[in-house]
Length: 260
Image 1 (tube, rainbow, N blue to C red):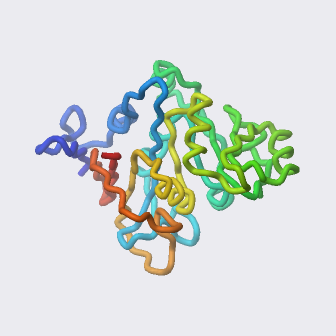
Image 2 (image 1 turned 180 degrees about the horizontal axis):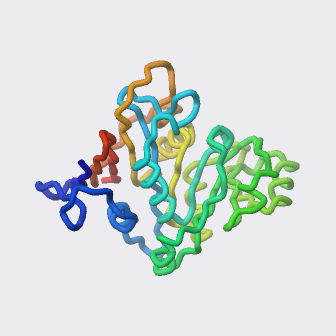
């Protein structure tokens, strides 16, 4: 069963022709379209996956709890974004590579005034990254390294030498999550997507700058001590989001919740 449930409609809606089939990339792109933004506006959404018992990873990686449709939505969300924001540990653990241009989304991106692919923005305080990797040396769009003003100067120089743009978003070594969002938006990167990891997502939640959470609920159980999708200190008052839509396929639930 593959159905999209718009939360504003009492009747579940299937694919556009009513068939029980795989959703097309265009249909997924319509379902996950960014809202219209004001001239100075920006929108930060997160895309995460969790098991039924709350694990965001298995053996340190998200891939074992993911699935084929989850990866299609992962690709769709990337194709709609101006920038993909990710923590340095996730870059190291998941083996991040540059985002690629996809023909299926070329016309949609052009109409939205976007380049051929989103930029990748890596958030790091220590700058402990391998700047010889393709993510930094051969991206289609220059990779950004988001750090604090007190980050090691030799590492900042190495990032620039590799072709990355260094974005300062904090007075100390650490990155100020709210300022990071603003600095990226000031560079025209207003449709923002974060893929975590949990520590980075926790920082965005704590700073109250997350506008939308796209959460895949994997029909799996792992037990153990794996991280949740968001880590770090808890907020004083829980942030309430409103459901936007739910897509179901092969037991996976693909949910979207937006800021009220």
